[in-house]
Length: 172
Image (cartoon, rainbow, N blue to C red):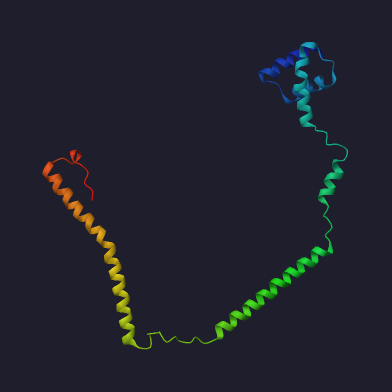
C-alpha cells in the first residue's frame, strides 16, 4: 500500500467513515509494512486492535481447558461419608416419627383445675377473665379522656380570642 493511500485512509478513519475492510487494511499496514515517521505514533493503536481481535492463547491453552473440563476422580472415603450421613439422617427421622406417634396415641389426662366439667364454675371463671380485661381496657382509656378535656379547653380559648394562630400552645 502506498503512502498516499494510507494518508487518505487515515483521514477517513479519523472522520469515522472507514469500512471494516479499510480498517483491516490499516491494521495490516501498521503490523507488517514500513511505517513513515509521521505515522509511527498511530502504530500502537492499530496493533492493539489486532491483538485484541486475535489474542494469542498460548501453546498449553488446550491442555488447561481439557484439564478443567474432565471430571476429577472422587475418593472412596467421600462416598463412604456421604452414605453414612444419609443413613444417620434416616435413623434420626425414624426415631423422631416413632416418638411422635407414641405421644399422639397416649390419652390426654384432664387436669384437676379444668373448670369445663362444671358449667357454673366455667361461667364464673369466664366472668372473672372478662372483668380483668375490662379493668385493663378502662385503664388504657383514661389518658384519652384527658386529651378530650384538653381539646375542650382549647376550643374555649379559641372562641375567646378569635384566631388560633395567635394563641399560645396549651399542653398538659
